[in-house]
Image (cartoon, rainbow, N blue to C red; front, side, top):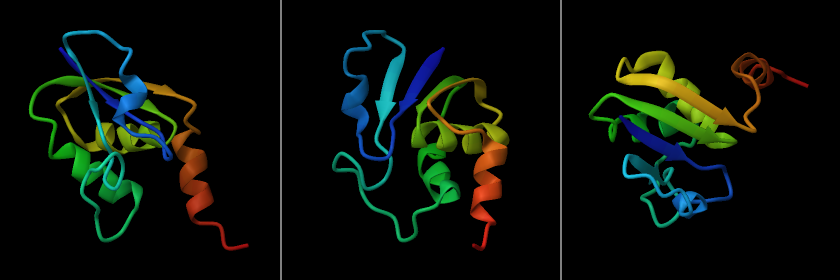
Length: 102
């Protein structure tokens, strides 16, 4: 099964270059590593961008921001069969932070 690696905010897909698995593919988030940009940066838009690249059952491995994007994708995409996050704050904490007004 394909495993997609999603990097953190200040990184690009090269962060995973030492992972030597035939079924592993690292992806750049929009605006990172020479990837095209998007008009408005949000978890939802990052997820839409990456989601368009998922064409087969897979496992998502997300580091930091990539973990948040992976969570957003996994909530809606039935092709995502597994999820691994590293150094990603919990989804509920993230949503609470987005609604704060202090």
